[in-house]
Image 1 (cartoon, one colour):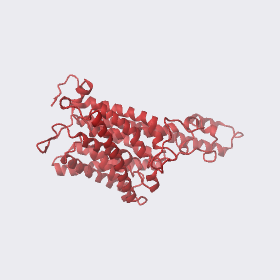
Image 2 (cartoon, rainbow, N blue to C red):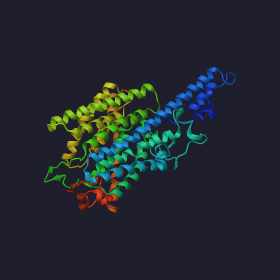
Image 3 (cartoon, rainbow, N blue to C red):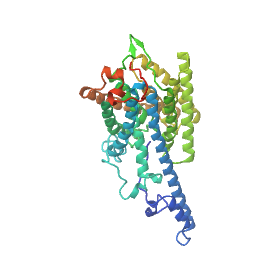
Image 4 (cartoon, one colour):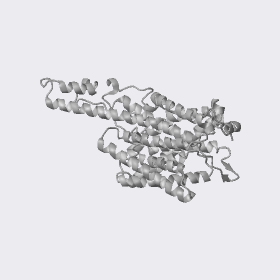
Length: 456
């Protein structure tokens, strides 16, 4: 989400800077109690209104941050449920590490790489320095972002997005990648690649100047992760026993209730992901985004159920779950600029696309245990292009240029990074460890103590 950050002057906000720096509910109450001789009645109302709206905006942004954080629990639950029991600890460990890596690297380098201010190289690359600190003269980061929320709120909301790209990769390469190799990849990709390419749009870079539009990250988050997932799957190869004698052998997930809980947590979190990307508590726009987001997800479920039932002759829960995520990813680029009924069409087509993509990817022997490439890459591309199709204010060709630019940069960067790790440290666990499970091999523990787990 792109935001314009300015230093407020007294003319831009109807309160003195000394008051603005102490904004909050106590100030609001105190101002109302000021005698008329100290401040005219009209001035009190103006200051009080601005202060109250500031508090409401900032509070909503923090609630949205919490909801995006919950999405990481959703990813962990979905990924664990859709894979084998013998790899559950490994899945949960990766998802725990990813959120920590994402927050720390975004604080150290990512935030100032994504939002560098004045670019040093023509909208392509810029860097505002290491670490995070409120703008000079803005104690506490209060007079920030057009008075909508604090500097610290802006940082923590944006930081929650950063780890999502690596989480997407985790599901696609699950059950056969070395833990340390994955963590090294995630650290570099989240610290450098995600914020660098994000700056092209959300940081005011060259794609933003062209008019490319991505409201909350169909491309900037989901496709960025999806391209890396594709690179990892290509270099890792399929899991043992997945493709035998030219035939596809399903490797079933071990816990469908857990996977379902994960999807519902993700759907819940998406209200913060998209609703928070309004970057204020504007009641009309936030509620509108909630509606388009929900209807796209619902339509995605219906589309996926219909097509999978027709093709497979039986209703497939995993397809229905991925259908909801497909609709959510598809609407994320244009949730604020397409009509309500268009959001239904976008979600429904995303549901069809995810089913077709899962089947095609499986047929060409690309092993993606959770369907991450289909959900995040394919539907992320679709959602980004859909903005150019359904919104009269945005160009399809500009959207296509953005998709191609992100694809070229992210796939190339991820492929080179994965290849370098493969050559130097190794990328895949050995055959024995894969058969026994990464829980025992990488962690020396099992997720379900007291039960006999099939090692085959």
